[in-house]
Image (tube, rainbow, N blue to C red; front, top):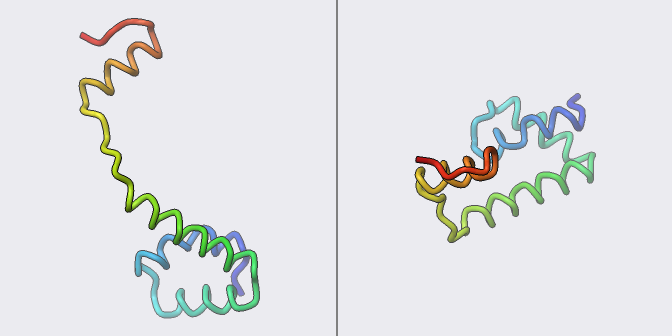
Length: 78
């Protein structure tokens, strides 16, 4: 039988559809018995959905490099 640690390690694989039938059944069986793991998986699903709806875009590479340079060395990137 799986432990809670196993569920947290494999939850993303479950949501991505990357687990074998045997792996999915083992996770589902554990979650049928463990409310904490059901809650964890539900929170992970909700987090993924919210991140997927995000309207923020990553900064361009030059802006990111300049920000890191200021944070690390107090200088602007060239």
